Length: 447
Image (cartoon, rainbow, N blue to C red; front, top):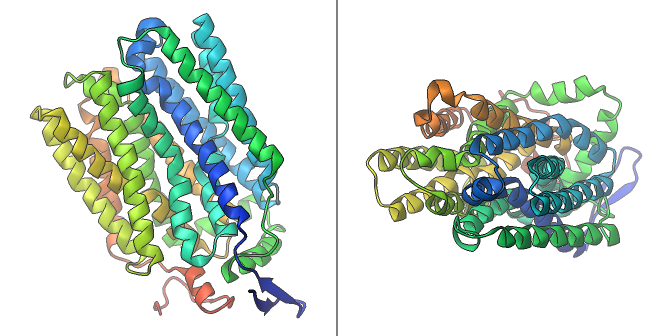
């Protein structure tokens, strides 16, 4: 079935039933984001064996993670620009190509015991970062109906974090510190073959957009993008940044997800001060990131079923994260059993990473009808900048005691920013009113 509305020329434009192909596209993007996160975090997760056999020190791993974040920050506006011009397929192909080449180059570096070659491969992997981080929000907005949109965003935006979490699991179970180099080679070879399959799948079939919009809000956004295409780069992003509610969501995204990414990227170095090795750190990191998938999925289900507003869900998740981090700090200082710290880490991850898809949706809601690529770019940049700032704090001056306190305080600040003034969900209002553009400002009363 289809529903219609008239465009500016009085012609009928159909809102079509969701296309079945959306599930194939979601699976392919999920795998690309998952592998990008897995490879990005792999040598941090196996730092014990990589330091012993490949000579990759903790400082080198931290710098590489920081470079990956910087690459995402720099590339995000360009990737978003080309997506907004209708080149989503081309950006997917380029991202998968970088992922594929990076994996094979890493394999070459591991085989030849050359750290420089490994870092080159990791840098290429980082080029897939923008698509892995905000491609899911664009895909769900364009292809999924209203009642599936938040859940689709949750699964796709968290896939990168699930990949990073699975790398911790691999470091704790599959490639422990005492293993030889052969297991690392087999692991990277598997990554290279998987990346090749992902690239092939995109080349075979991956359209840039559906034949018909999946929702009224998407149709309105398409019409708005035709107007926005006449704006300059500065005007386009300035229009989004002039929205105070969006800026609040963006800052909270950086304070939550960005700093948590930095915390996870330096987890082994952080927890080593408490006498924890690669295996325990791996279990703690894995529990946090995989707990985020559960938290994000549960929060998305609550929102999609209309049981709680996006802003309220995010506020609750940040409160849980703050309390969880507080308990984690006490546990580390008091030398609580590792099993208890793993459980607390899962709760913290469920809170912090659970906010990722919800804040993406909240940002797209409040910035509507601005292009989703502009909102996604700014969120990704804020995420990367926050992680870079975390990595840049000099350990030789400040030590490592601050590493757990920074994300704890960041969650508290985010909670305060979201707890009071309401954020308007314009996109949902548009869908409820079947395509009408509502012109109320942030200061107007909510319906």
